[in-house]
Structures are given as C-alpha cells and as structure tokens.
Length: 330
Image (cartoon, rainbow, N blue to C red; front, side):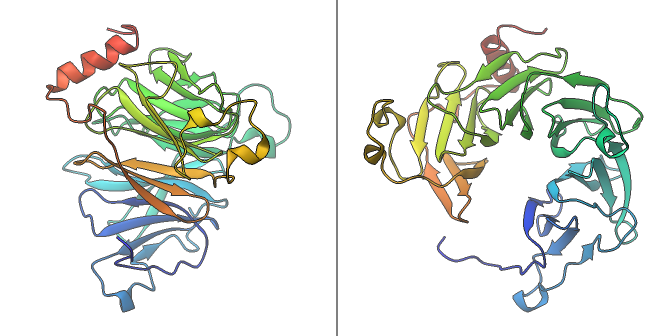
C-alpha cells in the first residue's frame, strides 16, 4: 500500500478517526478545533471535499480538541450512534437520524476540592465501551483518573479508578471479557483493571522505558496479548501468558531491538533518535500490526512467533485471561 485510495482535505488538524461497523463507508473524524464530521467514502474523490454531516456551529459542538471518536452499536432499535470526548470536559453522543444532533452523556468533573469555575471540569482524553454493553463506558482524563459512567445517568460517576499519575491517553476494553480493560498513560505505564476493583490488577512497564505510552491495542484473536507504542519510538507486544514483567517483542522503529541499547552505551551508539510512535492496531484476520508515528509514517509489521490464532472457544479465552490476572474475579 504505497498510495492512499482516498485523500480527505480537512480544514483543521485531525485528532481522531473511526470507521462505522454497520456502514463501513462512513468515517467519523474528530478535529483540533472541536469539530466532529462524518465523511462518506463511497463518493468520488471530487465529492469528498465536504463531509455529509458536521457539528460546525451546532450548539453541542466541542469547544476544545476532540481526542477520540467511536461508533457505538445501540442495538436493533436505536442503531449506531457516534460518541466523542474532548478536553472541554464533555462526552457527547451524536445522532444522525435528523441531520447531526447531540446530547452530553457526561460533563467530567474533577475529583476532590477545586476552587474556581474553570478548574471544576476535568479534561477528557479517551474512552471505551465494554464489548456488548452500550449502557456504560470508561472515560480517561488528563488528571490520571479513569471514571466508569452510565449513559442514562450523568450526575455522578459509577466508579473512579486511581493509579495513573499522568494523563490517560487510551482505554481499551478486552474483546473477550467485558470486565477487564487496559489503560496507558504519560506516566510511562500500561495498567490492567477489572471494573470491580478501584485499583489496578497489573502494571506493565519496561525497565528501560522513561517515556509516555501513547496507545495500546488488544489482539482480537488472543485474549492475553496486547501491543503498545511509546514516545521513545518503540513498539512492544506483551503476552500475559508468557510474562507480566517483560514484553515478548520490543522493536524500535529504526529496526533495532531493545537489547542492543545498554544503559552504559555511549550516546553515539544508540543510533538515530526514533520518532514517537503514536497509534497501534492489530489486523482482525491476519498476524499483522499497523503502527503510526509523529512524522505521519505508517508501518505495517508481520508478527511471527506468537500464538495469535489459538483454536480456543470463547470461554476458554476468558479463562486464560482470568488465570493470567490471578483469578482476580469470578
């Protein structure tokens, strides 16, 4: 894939994208100026200059950058809606039945004492819905807290999870076991949680990493495998069934493995400084990983040596993950 099939010229910096599952031709785009727009990729290139729907100057438009957008299946009656989160402190649900309309699912509030109107709102950075449950979600904030929220009750949080000491850049619910979820942060760590416990179950941090973890992704085919990307240019793949302490794969974007970077290396021995890796995604069907970086480059890796296609029924996948988590919950 050396050349894109479609090119969209967006009027503001793009901070988030997500394809619809029900209508894969629809692409939702979140922008730095707070706009949420939907593009129909079935149109010819010449017709892609304008989105089919956009928040524009609607009353519910975000006032800060939109850091994530995600299509959520609400079931056969309500169909698919779009949810967005922004550092303006709002989690917003968008409906497309009559144009683009919105309502706030939650106005994120700071935990503890805060003086002044401005400081009472918490800045939202990330969110995710558990597999098969569109009634509640987790929201990650700049303060390092993760909040479990209900879509039908926006007055207070259902639960607050503490453990991160920096902004929470991504939350990913397990595709196999809805109770479990991962988060990554500017505090250099990835943490594994269950919704019953306010404190994390496991923490993942390579000993030589002293930089932000930008993004994480679960393997869609193996319940114990996930990948992460970091600010110092590395891609890591973790398999909880192999080790909780070290990733099974660690690759810098210039192709070097982490074991050639010793603490007592001379600076010139470390090679070029790698660009920050900012996005990661597993293929649904192949042992393939796509990674994006801060320079705009996208690399596609083939993964070898990992059990990415185990012949296990769904319950066995859940049991495998539970076992790795120490039988945390029933």
